[in-house]
Length: 218
Image (cartoon, rainbow, N blue to C red; front, side):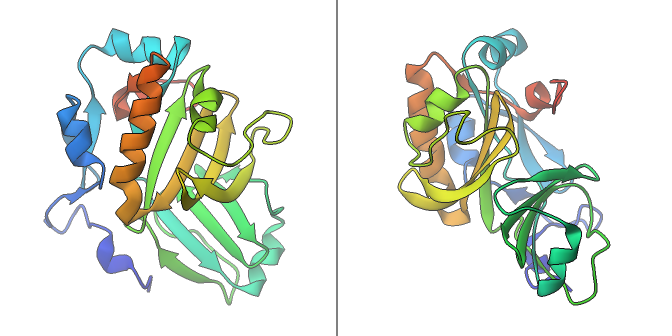
């Protein structure tokens, strides 16, 4: 059993909705929320046209802390053929190797079939996730992150540990105009404040899950 399974809501068990650490700030920014798989998710921020414009001309910032995050650990992970520093998409999820014996799996549903000897820890409520989408996403990240996000250094599929808003975190380059950062759950609100302020200076702002899911690469 996942050692943190109790922290992840069961949508069928009638439990209270799980909430992102960024929810209060998203609500103050005008978010509309809906229940999604046991989570209270910010699905929109007013005018859909404004959100789409941010995604296509400046940068949109989306709280995706509700996505499933599994930490896999064990020497048997070497058999999966993953390369440290490079993430791969498999079965609707990102497989992000931290070390040869430790991998973060982001997205997807349930626990995947794994080699014998691999342990699983559910980190869904242990890591906050913020996604930045749009032509200015790299410029936005460079304003608060110590990780070098130039395309020649961090191309698509790069997965990097490092300092994110002066806190330990991870960076995943999902596409040329889509970046996701992860930090500890307790630092999620702080991260949102830093990123929202930087995005506003670039003409960007928050977007909801509906706008993100409406993209072809979502």
